[in-house]
Length: 317
Image (tube, rainbow, N blue to C red):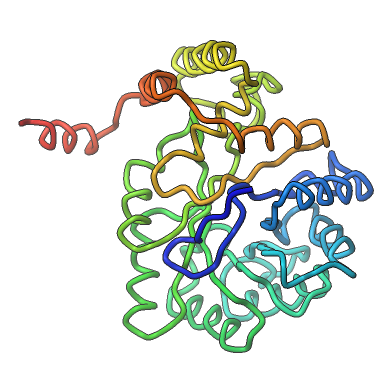
């Protein structure tokens, strides 16, 4: 397993991160523990969860597995926005909710610290100053080591980073966005922002919920591609490249993403041990530049305004 530095921080994480969104739903506790064992046996140290997943059940499953293991040898990430309650302060990024949610995650994970604590989505109602101060307080108290954001628009993420810099608060170290061959919108602004600000990129749904492997229909489920003909062309090209490379489509899709500029570790979300084994197969894959170019071209898609205009002016020479 290769290890990458998380953005501009000194934290080293494995080149793949094991996501746990299926734990407690498609994947029961015993199978989840076997998958965690297999992932760490393969050299993985980076595990991502969230208090939202199955109303805390995924965190509890990870916490039960963590007990008795080398906690300091692992990087455990979780996320905050909506917890298990239904009260008016049981969601969002207010100081009250962040502090309560962090304590609840620590209990479920059965640990005294969270390595990477991420705001699950941007909260347009809570003041940025309040959110930033609450997160900084968790780092100062030693309950959190690093901070990350997920599902944040570029403007709000930049404002959060600027605010932390101006006030001497702990900044975000990573961004967790939707990013894969069918969804490259993150490249319009966010990847450039991350490069400029030193944030590592942790793509979620790197196989687009199974659409890239054929496990899910292209038009099924959330985040379905807006351009079905283009999506079909992407999948067809991916299958062709995979056949030529002698690998599975999932391995090729993962390797393409791992090689994108700024990507630290895609967050894989296998439901079974067989799916996990297939994902791990991407680690020793080296894509032919011709194959990469084909995937780049078919997945690029048309740029919306104003990015199309900016590209036209950029390429005018």
